[in-house]
Each structure stands twice: as structure tokens, then as C-alpha cells.
Amino acid sequence: MAERKPAKKGTQQSAKRTTGKASKGFTDEERAAMRERAKELKAAARRGPRAGNADGESDVLAKIAEMSEPDRAMAERLHAIIKASAPALSPRTWYGMPAYAKDGDVVCFFQSAQRFKARYATFGFSDKANLDEGAMWPTSFALKVLTTAEEARIGALVKKAAS
Image 1: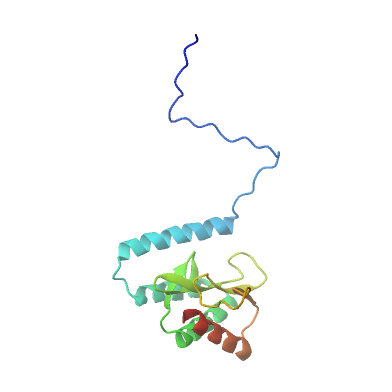
Image 2 (image 1 turned 180 degrees about the vertical axis):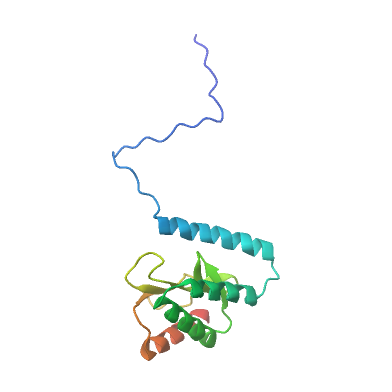
């Protein structure tokens, strides 16, 4: 009988490609967003559980200030609308984007067009938003400009989402 050799511990074999195409993986913008999220988590851990809304608000305002026009103007206006419509939501950053949370969970966020080199900015809601309506409802909106009609709709949606 042949003796079996014990398997080597701690070694891994690399996965082989079966399609012949190299995976592109994450884009540079996606990797940057993940790095931003890691920084946010570290900063939150350093601040501790007693950190107030002031820290989150200053982070959000700093991110908005970094944006170029017209995204900066939209983000500033959205910030004001959200604060007026749902004062219970706490400003914070989320993957480097301005976001607004309830009980620590992000409810809505703004993604500038420049962030992912898109042709429009996005205002979106997470699954924590109280927007359920039937079997299907929208969770994000493309924004090119904000008119009074869009501002009113966003205000109503944010108020409902935070309820």
C-alpha cells in the first residue's frame, strides 16, 4: 500500500480562467468609492458612538464643496430640501457621497454625475426608505436640473421615506 502524503497547509492554487477573457473587475471610480467607504468606517470608529450630527454634516458639506457645477448647486439644494422635509434624517457620507440616515441606516443619497462619469446625477433611496407602494416603485431618479416641480416631488418623497 502506498503511503499518502499529507496536504500542504497554507498554500493556495490560483484560479484558472476558463473563458480566455481577463476580468475587468471594478472601475477606478468604484475602487475609489470603496476606499472612501473604508475611510468613513474608520473615521466613525475613531469618533465613537457619541459623535453628533455636526460631524456628519461637515463631512457632507465638504463633499458637496468638492463637486463641480452643476452638481454642486444640485447637491446644495438637495441638502436644504432634505433638512427641511425630514429633519430627523442625519447627514453623513456614504461611499464618498452625501447621504442621509435614520437610526444609522442610509435612507437617501446623492451621486454626482462626475463621480462615475455619467451623463446625469442620481438621487436615490436605499431599501431602508419607507417608499413601498404595491409590487413595484422607483428607488432612484436621474437629475439634470432641479426645478420647483422636482424639488417639491423630492421633498414629498424624502418625507415619506423617513416616516
